[in-house]
Image (cartoon, rainbow, N blue to C red):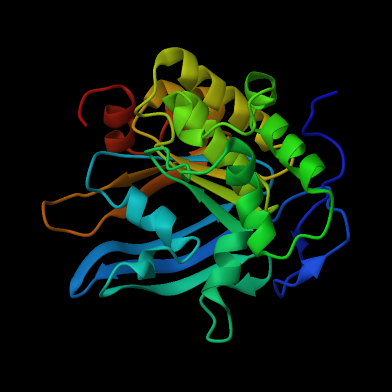
Length: 280
């Protein structure tokens, strides 16, 4: 049986963000309605609506500058960390509106983890990299077990189990990215967002990241931004195509459907042109 199958345990959170001891067997989905994102007066993304299915991989594709990374950062309120940046619309995690006035953004960022394009491990040991988030969130369980479980789910345990005291910065780029994934998993999020997580990696490391994502969807909801069409076709269940019709316009979600439909018979010519390499 896969390491990631079965009931989830660890630093679970209830709908209000409080620590929960109830094991979970599935993740939550997300519903986005009329989401627009701004940088000051500049509108970067406009009126995006879609549903992200639980325990599936959703890929976001489209040419550079069309708002994919901005959009994904709105899904866990990372967008507003940038000065003057803000979002409008409704984003629900399960039944909770993450932009409601009484919602704590820090809690949302624990429940919806983010893995960035460039690996960013801490200058700490491999063990402490994984344990750090759980520790500051008050985890009271067996930390050794949590670190091992998280590293296994990130497909890194076998490579580092004998050097947990060594610095995470000593790992290869692909290993560092999987260490960051393990760090994210240790706080037991509902959703994992990944912004071009394999774009800077070699083919072997990329394959390991893709394999990891396929495993993770058994327990988590995964959203990935990628420019790699083959990657999107291989790993995702659903695909959204972002596009800018005219220079200077905000990015829009041009088409969203099951991945097989997007890559075999898309509804829009622009989508077909992009996935077949005619532009972008």
